[in-house]
Image 1 (tube, one colour):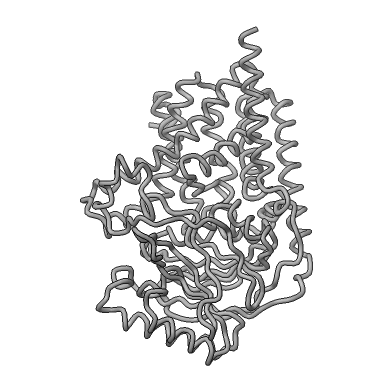
Image 2 (cartoon, helix red, strand yellow):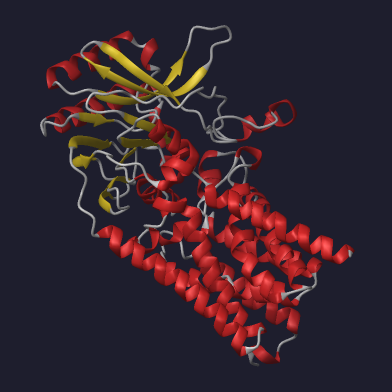
Length: 505
């Protein structure tokens, strides 16, 4: 039985489910990034032809399947580190996928409602609706900007250079514009459809032309030599007191090995110290002496416990020299249900469900380390997926960015690779190099062009050093931030308001 002979509802379900699965596989590690240029066409066509309620419902189905495939790595974390039995571990992933899918459903409903009066207007507004939804998802309820459609193109350097102008949202807008133009070919007269294809083709052509042009620019002058380490310490052993001396010995050995390469800075991963650094004078003295003997400052990730009552716990990056601690940064953007529990007064009981749920205190400012070796900013764990936060460090004078993280919670799944895929955009947005030290991987050096110059495979214990160029210019995105997202919100709001006004009239 052919696809066309099936009932319309079943045919729609099969097509939307298949394309949603393919869209999820556009991201690491499968990296079917080419599929995104057509994968949004079926839900757009469906939204143009369906009533608003049906468009919302099918948009939610499409989004849920997409995010289930994208976030499938979460099941490993809950199976391994929580008391939730399998297959109930998938309920957590489904809940998050269902929440994220609401933004896709709202996108489909908005397209449907606008199409009731003008299909061309709906197609023109679709890219702005999508970008507005991505921005809102990255900000509401603490924000979860994972899996923005633009991130699928992290390996396509000519495409992502426009992030210098408009951030990752610029890439998302181009992708959705191409999909909307293709959708127009299914629902519009050929002359109108041809016009849409021409506009989208021109936008894509301009994007690629700008990208190839920017990739020919000479490298900025000035550089520093930075060494990173990937210790590959399994998560259950990181804070095990019985393993603490072994953990420290691994770090000291790797640090000495890195120091032999004469770097200007040695970077440890997130929460690398096996005990709170400021509460362990012996370890602090050892690291200070090591920094002095190597004549290299150490950037060390550690849990920090202050002396207040009750004590406040921070996820902190310390800069150490032979004089001890000379700088610190406390993580600002904490992971919900990982480093704090939202609405803890109501649902604080969930802390007992998983060993990775903590209660940390957020930092208060995006502190830039003045050096040595040069001013730099540190984003801890998934802070780097928030473009505005990285921009705060750049505005504060950072000349390169360090990301220290511990993705051991995600094992050998696609999670660490998806996390890595977002940092080329931070590099391009500000034309700044990104140095990434991850406990179990994926550690990497990323050039200002977004090119991943070097990366360390998962669970390989090693040290790597690279020459890192220093930022010398201010991009449009550095100056204006998410201006395109604000424009998308304005266009979305205005188009829907105009539609409501016309309907009332």
